[in-house]
Image 1: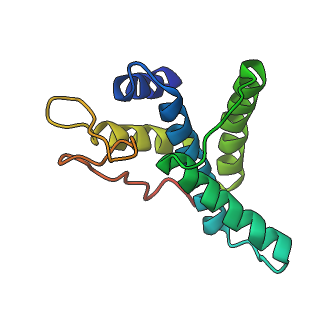
Image 2: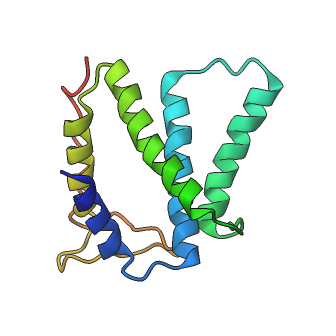
Image 3: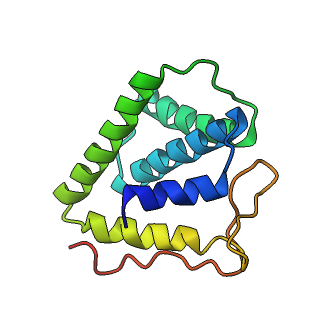
Length: 145
């Protein structure tokens, strides 16, 4: 699976992306970061870290549900940051002894299974792609030590 195949999924899901679509996808992206924080068991022994975690979680929800919106985009800086996030995310997985290439392929196949029997997405009331009747969760067992 390549980045092009992942991009194709998103182009199928949102052929003409809107500002709302951008906000929903950004919320999903931040939600996955919060999920990563949950997975590594950080000791939130300071009030500031607890507040930051809660803020990130609320930010993700607000973007997905539409009560928080972005208002500016520096596209060159955003592109650089997103590309760096892909590279550093793979690096985190490699350092954790995970098969990132195989995991990304499995997650992408799972995402394609969200589409309905006609090969098109269905959305929740906020514009997020729903898990369709053919959805199969990713099987990541054996991809980490």
